[in-house]
Length: 139
Image 1 (tube, rainbow, N blue to C red):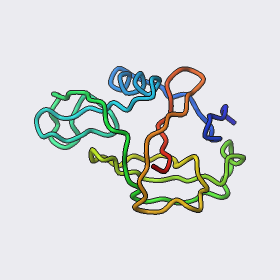
Image 2: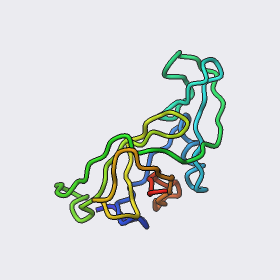
Image 3: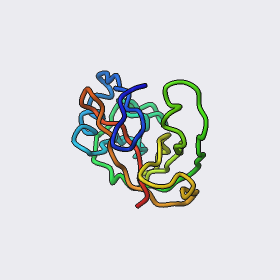
């Protein structure tokens, strides 16, 4: 199993590339930075240098609020492999206040209390290599 972060979940190290390096550098500082298309104003998720709505390569990075709402969620109680000892845990789609929906975990609470429509705030689980994983906790 990967090393565990403060959330009690595994923290596998990400593999940043040229397009995602800025995102991962910000997570190491407990900040959420995302690209916004200069052409259509769409906030791009997963971070990259091209808009997934209009195809423009003109994007500007900005610091997002880190706030969002649980769009969908499930409690994982049994799972094979390296995450087995972390169960139960919440896997969720969080809709950021800026628009995109992010697949993530909800941490820092009883998994049974997480519900659709719940307000959440970004938290960052550091990895052994520096960048942190984006997770959320009830606001």
